[in-house]
View 1 (cartoon, one colour):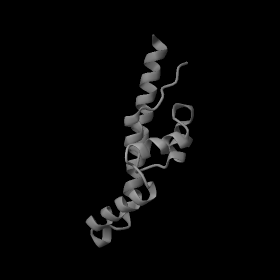
View 2 (tube, rainbow, N blue to C red):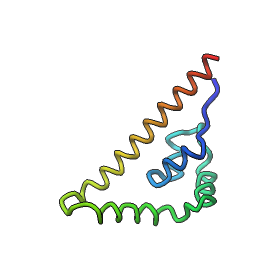
View 3 (tube, rainbow, N blue to C red):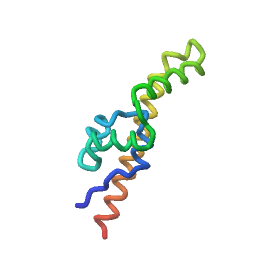
Length: 101
């Protein structure tokens, strides 16, 4: 069985939601090494990941009403889960198509 390999667009979709180590852990042999993922993010101008994640969270907090602030972490986690599930569904569809050839 041939495995789908994550594409640059896949990494871009996960960029601020998952660390390179988390991406590697989630997708295993279908992904680059965490070092290569980090190098890709750097080459694309996605440097200082933790600072950008923190800035994204702060921006979300600034937009939220005070009573909604606790929901920001939950919302980001939900977004991560949605993107990962969507990507896994696409991977399974592609691999099934390849297997049927």
